Image 1 (cartoon, one colour):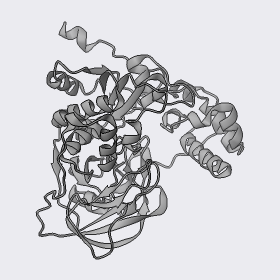
Image 2 (tube, rainbow, N blue to C red):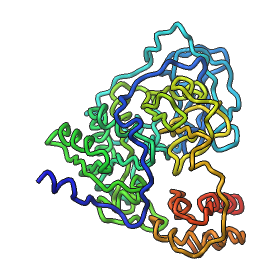
Image 3 (cartoon, rainbow, N blue to C red):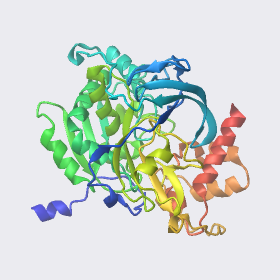
Image 4 (cartoon, one colour):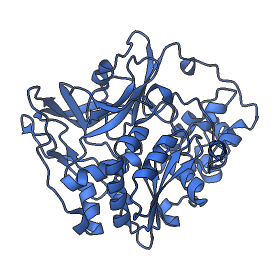
Length: 448
């Protein structure tokens, strides 16, 4: 029976790819803390929506956990001090995607204990769904899988929508990344509390934790610790990229499809990352804000890869210095995973709420080799790989012809979530994902 279970095929979606995982570098490394950086840089725009507004002034002392920026409306979240220290400046800072953004610069007091001194305990059982939504916003929680969409917004179903199922995303399909894996193994109590809160807030009747089958130890652990009286199950899905995309995971687990242009709520589903719900389960009972997150730091240019609890605002230069970055060999540093992550031009970029991983590749890495781009040979490999059944070949041809409007109106460009599958399999080395990002950006600018 044990042998049969090994070869059992777990549910999945159509198409997709199987990149080399590289997860063995950190999968067995427990989460641990590193020293605080001398200065933390907290951008006011770390989430989808409206940037936060500063509550502090230059020269003001703050304690760890204290609110330092307020949310500006419903589609926004506040910021909290990741350390005890003094506000040195409120100024522009570099970002991973290029433009500078306003940020709070916090000089850390080296002699401080860095105990969280700002909290307000809550009775979760007595809270109404609306009170939970408000508490999640007050905590500054966003999607920690990389999307950074304000979590409280997803917990309040749109008018006329009924949420029946909460899907908890524990797939972590990006190569190198293992922070979610460790969270499921080490923070399962907080995760279960967070799932209970999501169920109560959304009104859903059940929750399903979806985990890729390269993490069966996490599936077994969760099944062992989930209380029998809770409507929560843990299910294995096939290890395939991009299994962690919410539309793909919904298809794999529920065999339902989100309508084109629609949201998971349209079919009665809400999807949350395991890291988000674990933080929710940890922070809300104490009335605290999000000031740190688990980050995988890995790659061939890192001497001591691992999973680390990192204060929000930690500069990459400091973080990589703590894990033994081979500065003379590093070719590229990526925030997130290598498939959908963003290469940074400066190591002065800080870790934000959206950063699940930092991957440092060597100059000699074959993935960084400058490859000649050849014309499309119409092989169809990109069509086989695309998880949402677009025609990347045609979209690429239209991009070269600068027919960006046609890409959107006739070939569903906006349905592309830039997973990178098409570019990964292209034998002509065409950077299709980059073409699509540029096309969408131009269309956004043109259409306001």
